[in-house]
Image (cartoon, rainbow, N blue to C red; front, top):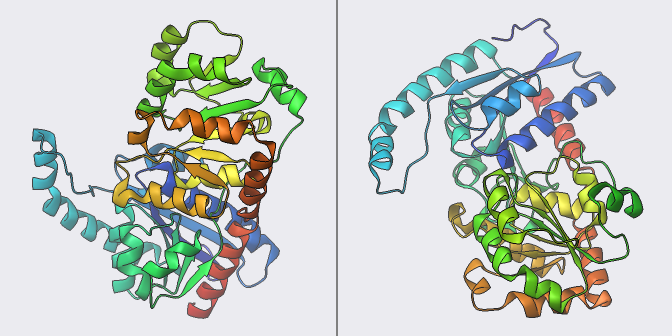
Length: 383
């Protein structure tokens, strides 16, 4: 447990987990708070305590970033009718009770000035118990349709930081502030020639960047395995394709060798990838959209149909309404809707330019700093 070394040290609990979409904003906020505290005199330092589930991605990402993590045995409600899903639901009440007891103990010992909830079921118990222990709570919502934790606790939070204006209609009565999504270490565009050389691509050809996320997107991968040769025959373009590790060998075997297709299981150098891309094809997760807006990229979005509360389609439609993207539902891929749309966007420079401008218009480069300034103000008022 982190000790309270200074009476004027800001102590911040951060609650979120399960997926990178909830963990990365929390890490971005913590890292920016460290910088903000160094620039301000209200607090002499800052200490953090992260709280999450005992099996989500937070168990790797948060310690790797150098922060302390307290895990709770909490699980989400399984909608699966399998034996494992039934077992998960049977053990849910016991896990919930154990999580509440542990969260109470951790919060009382750490005694935070403020708790920051970034969503996911792993954040529900810490946020609830913070409120019950009279600890001020702020929430950061990444999606156009707010997650369950945000909807449940928004009215009791001191502030809810939103990425999309569309979320406002679902949070009536809450104290909201549209800031954009906090991000980490994205950098800026690099020279196109350099980016093309890095991947072995032609800088003169339009580049379609297929991005299924770090784990890939099986339906997207299988669609392009079947159709990519047709698309390349019809369109003068090249393809950079992150397949995800699970599908890489399958895609590689099916595609074979084609000088206009570069396959990668995972891309660490995303600044290079975004700098060579002319058009994205990707899911509509919050962090992915924040990144492509940061680089001002137009996109054809294929929302994950199984996403909780269909939030990816809400995100995608917000991007489409802004003019930054076009949306194709996964079910429509089999109906042949993709090629006409791809042709319309990629062969029309006017469309690409207007979508790129709209994407750039959604960029919020000061989001993390705005959120952290607000957190410091609220914590100082409550200290």
